Amino acid sequence: MAVHQYHPTDLHLPEPNPLYLRYQQIQAESACAPHSHPWGQLSLISLGVMEIVLDQHRLVAPADYLIWVPAGLEHASYNQQALDYTSIYVNHALAAKLPAEPRLLEMTPLIRTMLADFCERKLGHMQDEWDVRQAELLVEKLTRTRCQESYLPMSQDKLLAPMLAALHCDPADPRTLAQWAEQLHSTERTLARRCVRELGMNFGQWRARLKLLKALAWLKGELPVQEIGWRLGYGSTSAFIAMFNRELGCSPQRYRLQLAQPGG
Image: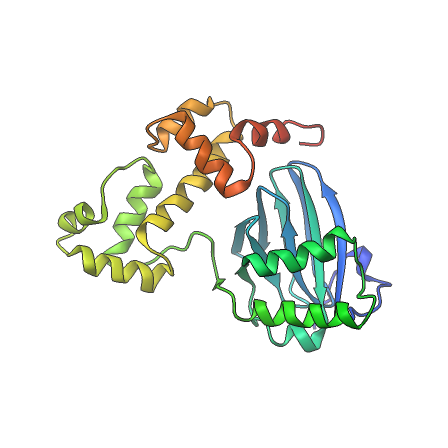
């Protein structure tokens, strides 16, 4: 039987009732060695992107997603950017309602508001009956929100695979879905249907996510922001900055500065 390397903060912690929230400020370029938790865990970040690695599988999520990892599952984590981090443990009864596998759970405005209430009060264990009811409602809402295996899924579909691979190599490729359909000897409608079926999103959404992840990787280097925007196919630097702000809640310049902070 595998020996679980529980996170040190878990060793003397009472069981969540039904949630327990732990708050941290994380330095840029920080990593957490492989470990597991005795309870299911939801990871919430304030901005940027969090990566969690489980065996050969990697979950990458921006701040508008929660990362769900079931109890006892060994994982490591990595953060490129300095951020506020909240770990939310879920007791076994409520965790049974959530996915049996690690997943990304999209935060709706209501889910975000409920979590903000807990975080603003710096709540650890639930303090009263109202907190318990709110925790139960939160998990119920999470069972109904969009659940994804990956932020940027891939596909082995014979039509989609070459298109996705080409875009990975050149995210600035301006071809529309109709143009791709013509090149692949298919129809726009067929490609659109397969995108939704295989990727869980439309072509435009997938390409926007690809551009965001490429931008994050390039911002770790020395490329000027203007050139990154150009390499991603944006017509102007302001359009690139607007996209970045919309997705991550900060500018590319601020993101890069946080990467350069001590400890980064």
